[in-house]
Length: 93
Image 1 (cartoon, rainbow, N blue to C red):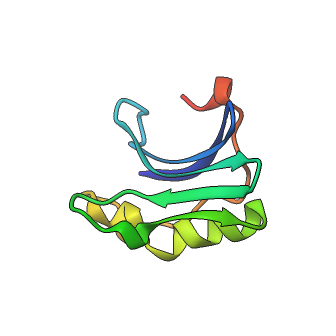
Image 2 (image 1 turned 45 degrees about the horizontal axis):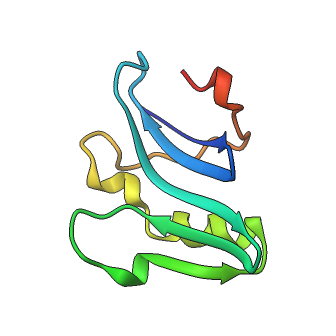
């Protein structure tokens, strides 16, 4: 399994992918808005605390998402760490 940030049109998405890139799942994301950055960490239930608006920086927003370890919700996700480099949209798969 691989865990990485991928650029998207208005921000970045946190992606959990199988080693063969056949299974790709978005487990979190950050987008830039006029008031700062909005961030969310995926969950299978209703947990409003896993989303936040108006975070001052991209770095803080990504730390917010990663603090929930949303990749642990998936089989094979436990024990992973996020790759340090952000991938461009085209190279993600």
